[in-house]
Length: 107
Image (cartoon, rainbow, N blue to C red; front, side, top):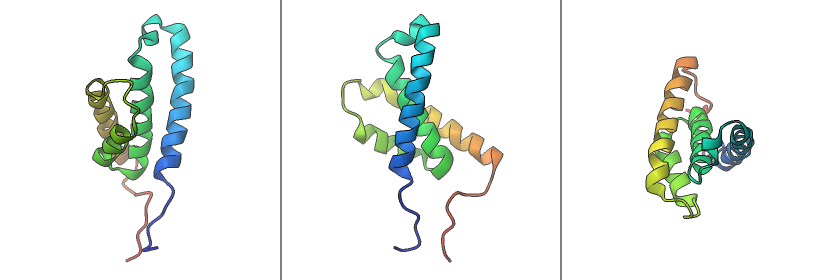
């Protein structure tokens, strides 16, 4: 369908959520500060954003997808700055590691 690869965004977000939840569970036991009500959602959303943007290199679209798909239990004004920083840092790091894109579009 137009030469675009499909099925990358939501499986990557799902993998990022499960990996970051395991990380949050491990950190909660070691650091009491991580049991705050805002730290786990921030860590989960930041890890999801970092994982997706390191592959697709679309930080703003990733932040918008996560903002629109959040459930509203945690205020977005608290989460969005950390998620945006994680997105842009992961793009910067992935550009330094490899300039090749995951996507190869037909010309």
